[in-house]
Length: 130
Image (cartoon, rainbow, N blue to C red; front, side):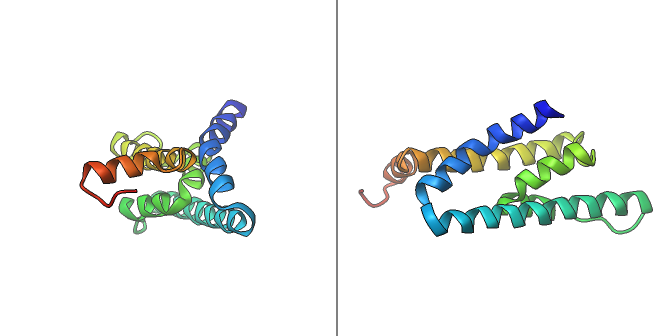
């Protein structure tokens, strides 16, 4: 369990660093609140879906779970997958989940690098010069 929480802290390092660098001050608290609220809601959705699965009730569509992960709730989803053991063994779901985590990591690292990757991609696509 400790190793898992250390892994989560590692996953949060780049987004946290990017938020600190890019938002600063009040903006940082907004981002932390956003990620915290999105994670809490996503964890709740996972818990509710697991409860419904056990009771045979209507389930939460996976695309809804992925939407909330993408909206910033991936840390809550990660915790729910480990603590509730829900959606943690389904390969297709895990692929989409880790793709979402990777997108968040890539955006955070790009922000830390001064948006070099974004500028390079925009230049390659014929976007506006810097």
